[in-house]
Length: 371
Image (tube, rainbow, N blue to C red; front, side):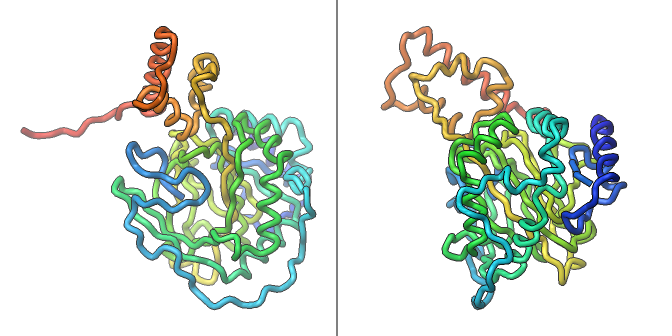
């Protein structure tokens, strides 16, 4: 397997360091099957041509059937005082596990994986005090809303979330503020090679029996980098709810939930993934996570030297869905001024052709039809 060297190095490091991050569902044997797992001891479909999508965050679209969306499941109970608090101005570097993120070699491994379009799975990612407090908040909250919808292209989802900020606990609000700081966004931009200077959004999620999320890419609006912070403490692979990373072969594709595990990936038209259905065996256990996206702030304009900025396939691969649409609008919007001079207009036409051929290639198969 192409990642064995990295995995073995990290397992050797794990043997020398006490695991203070809590219970993890990743055993040594399962770690060897998951190429991008790092240790100190992923709601809408991707680009759907012609569909109406939310421009960012957790927006609900008008394209689905609208089934059972936003139904609260229980009466609110009084909240207990949080066991941990983030002070104003806290950045992500302050709460990441220093045993991992102080190691330059590990940082380079993370950078390489994400830039190569791989999924990066970091075990024991945050300091234990923060992770345990977030778990307690997720386990204790009663503000869950069931979100379920199905779309004409076959995509669908069913899971519980807390989307309204008025239902967020103080710690959830503090966590969102931390993910949103300029220092955090600069750190993530440097780590991932993507522009994370736009807004950051995040929210709690809870998958119960039968919940799932069908294949999608997250390539919506200005989403640039996705994160899933798994916080389930008693989860087993047999319970389902696994994150399936479609670009990987089957043997390496299942990434099962485990406590204090951070999953990162660059959002592109090729970041296909889904969450498998949660099994009835999971009763009494909760698949809990806090997940969201960092967004790009760049919107292409005619005055930008986009031919130079997007000269290579690697640069074009970083385009968000909204950025691609902006380039389309430059050429197709009848009210937009024509790009001048004519030679530049043709260069942008060629650029768009390359974008569409590379990011939305034709299917490698065609159906066999009997006349």
